[in-house]
Image (cartoon, rainbow, N blue to C red):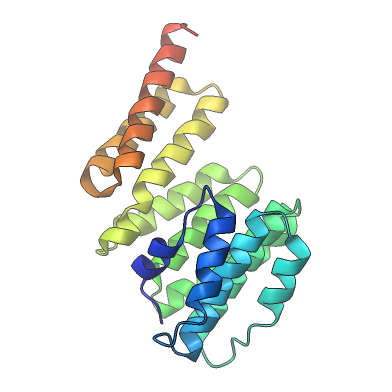
Length: 209
C-alpha cells in the first residue's frame, strides 16, 4: 500500500479540483499496482466530495472492492464517513468512522486510526472533546513523525472548541501545545497558524477585539 507521504504530495486541500486532476493522473501511472490505484481512488473520491459532488464521490467509493485488502477497507470507511459528514449527515457518519478507527487500530494503521478519531470529533456532536483527547492519547504513543503531526491539528481543534465554549484559558493551553508540536514535527504553515491562534486567544482573554 501507499505511504502517506505519497498521498501528501498529491494533495492540495485548498484546491480540490487540482487534487482531483492529480489523482486521476496518478491512477494511470504504471508505477502503481492495482491495490495502490484503488487506494488512490479513495482519495479521488475525497477530492470530488470536497467539491460538493457527493453522489459522484459516493458512487466511486461504492465501486472500490475492499475484500482482499483490509487497509483499503479502512480508507473507504473513512472517506464514506467524511463524505456523509460533509453532505450534512454527521450522525450517519459516526458508525462508519467508529468502524474505521477500530479496524485501523487492529491493523496497526496508526495514521488512519488517528484520522478516523479526528473525524469522529467533528461528526459526533457533543463528544468533540472526548474523541479529540482519545486521538491525542493515541497519536502521542506512535513513533511515526507523519502520524505524530496530528498532534498539531488535534490540539488546535480542541483549542478552538474550548475557545468557542468560553473556556478561553483552557483553550490557550491547547494552542500553546499545538505550537510546541508544530515546532517539533509540523509544517511552516502549521507553525504560523499555531502562533496566530495563540495571539487571537490572548486577545480574547484580555478583552481586546
